Length: 141
Image (cartoon, rainbow, N blue to C red; front, side, top):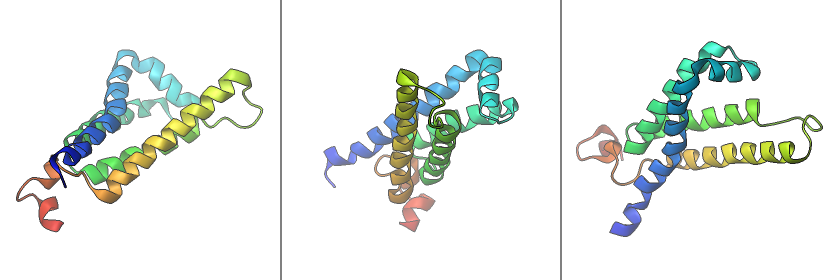
């Protein structure tokens, strides 16, 4: 792999991770409001705390390439569940621009999950803690 191509893996990981890190940190600004939003999807609002942890810690792990396959799989599942619970609107439940926006948001979640599943399948790539010399992941490869 050429040097310029090896830079794509960490850039891709960081770009995938940013949405989770930023979203998790922003939730800290309005815990009660975000807990109510979680409850609107039929889940207990107390899940705000594990949600923040998954987003921030999972995003950071993905960005630095630490246990990247596990972090990516966890975040992919999170993205799909969030998309189904909060953006998959039954036919006729929303109309016009609102329905179109929810479809776009749902597809965004699926697209992110697809990128994360690629990391799960292919590994962290170059410049990751998982692939450092002597690391367990490097020895397993």
